[in-house]
Length: 336
Image (cartoon, rainbow, N blue to C red):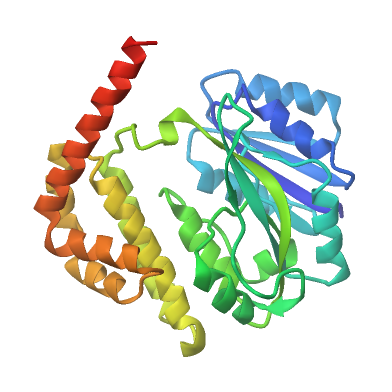
């Protein structure tokens, strides 16, 4: 058994895969790296195979394009490490961090350990955001219940690459990704955090991952209706799961659903007119009302409330604002 299994779903990441893999190899800790080529149409598979030829600890699998969930589950099922690293293949690890995080997990026999991350714009080394959860008990062993109430209660972090997860824990509680939908990290994270409420956990103050932002992840890209249906499916799954949790963390867990519904409101206003009409018929009003009751903050509450009861007016405002921003960006491009 090796120390860490790094699971890397890879779809059209020929430009970034080698940097990601090298950031793992350069850490002073024994890893196996499982790259799952998810039906890439560029040279991702060639890059992966070339890396595997150079390093015996790299395994390459390939499949028809089925999505990250299928790829991650496939990797988890064949992993042999003590802990899992669920890194996105266009991101990379910060130098000299993984060994420290692993040692903390191993020495304290943690079921999972969490870190912070830094976000940067693709093509630039400039850090846009440093994300670290708020909570008083950093760098000490706490229970999953304490972790949820302290850290999840202050903001839902679903970036699963920012941590290590004991493989035995994941398999014991069958913590696998929901396949066939996007936003699956939301459901996966709440299961990871609460499958055993007395699990041994640590939130560190270590920044371990650099998360890359691409142009197609910005609000300028136009989403499809499936994003709404996928969010609603996650909300349904999360609500079903949370209903079985003890009362002392249920209210905190319900905030995570409100957070996802809040995300849905932003996605909705970027749909085209035809898809917005379809979405109006799909979004249950009860989900919105429930989310108003359990927000993370007043802004989230006000946004969901306005979306629920004043959607046409809010739609007009958002569309007008987006058109203004598009004109500003176009003018800037013309002026060089």
